Amino acid sequence: MSPTTVSAVITVDGPSGSGKGTICRLLSQKLGWNLLDSGALYRLTALAARHHGVDLTDVEALQVLAAHLDVRFVASDAESEVQILLEGEEVTKAIRAEDVGLDASKVASIQPVRTALLSRQRDFAQQPGLIADGRDMGTVVFPHALLKIYLDASAEERAQRRYKQLIDKGVGASLDDILQDLRARDDRDMNRSASPLKPAEDAIRLDSTSMTIDEVLAAVLEEARHRGVR
Ligand code: DC
Image 1 (tube, rainbow, N blue to C red):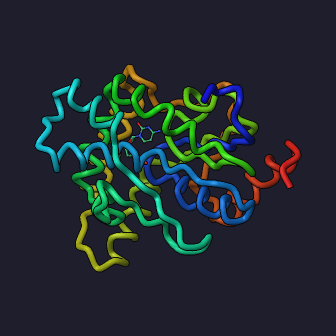
Image 2: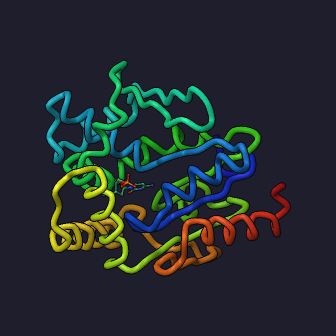
């Protein structure tokens, strides 16, 4: 699908922990629009590589894996979490593991993998509209989006949020380690040559460091209403 023929798209880009995932899920529920979690596609490619014993330096094999990724997103209803199936196996939780995230960021730095996943991402742009969550949604995948948001927060605040999530889940964690990992991932995502994380020129920039989720959601919805979204 060409980027000019898509239905209405709102893109939300930003670094890990900026609150994009939560905001995108809430926006999609509120507007009744489709949701693309593009990070999941990179995580799925990384997991598929692991399942098939493909080395993360084998660009050709990774490109083939990404192009033929057998994945299904199954939504039972608008409120419940989407189930993700990779080659028929439920991997909804498995792809969220820290080590899969780390592998995903390596896989995501390979241009042929990104190219292989491009049309699959654009195919999500179906009626009545799409909320696209990622790093290059506004810059590369949906350059003609109706509204582009770049959601940021300080590294310290993002690390705190991740730390709290893990502690709430009963998982032991070190705030220092989380902050270090987060900075390393930011560095890789922002400084790679293939579609680096950066705000699109026409993006609205929001800093969620001292905003609540409700405040961020309200700010995005207001921008969407200005553009005729009802
Ligand atoms: O958002 P996430 O943590 O699930 O993303 C996993 C990795 O994939 C992360 O290192 C950034 C990368 N990614 C990307 O390069 N482009 C996207 N559109 C989405 C994610």
